[in-house]
Picture 1 (cartoon, one colour):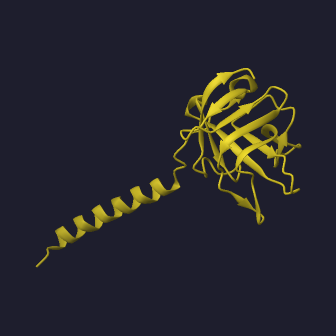
Picture 2 (cartoon, rainbow, N blue to C red; picture 1 turned 135 degrees about the horizontal axis):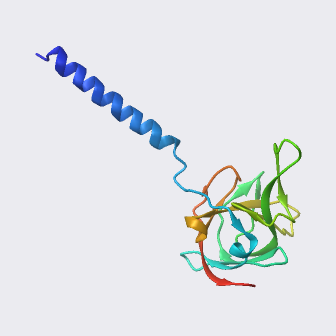
Picture 3 (cartoon, rainbow, N blue to C red; picture 1 turned 90 degrees about the horizontal axis):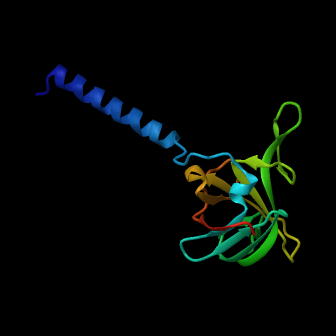
Length: 158
């Protein structure tokens, strides 16, 4: 027979475990870092050997990166691709609108707008993490590291 003190103790332990699980599920897991343009311009590499070069003129080239993303029934280009980039930035008086800016000089997330020969529009986000030492990819700018693609810097000034 279980005493009422043991039952109360078990209930407290279960409540504590539930609280820990709820807090863990709310955690983003990755801390973003706001950086200047010079901190993202350069070449970056994935663990599987893919590369991205982010240039000062706001263009990029991707070599051998598989994003494995389909947006609006259109695939983002895997393998080799190119396009333009900018920081996601708030716009307007209230700051409620976020746009891919061609003029913002700093931010914690870079938007990649792919050139696609099929005419499909594909924009992905690279979030600045690990104190600026890594960029991780996501389909949505509100999601940190939503895709299994992470880049680390290999060179500067391209």
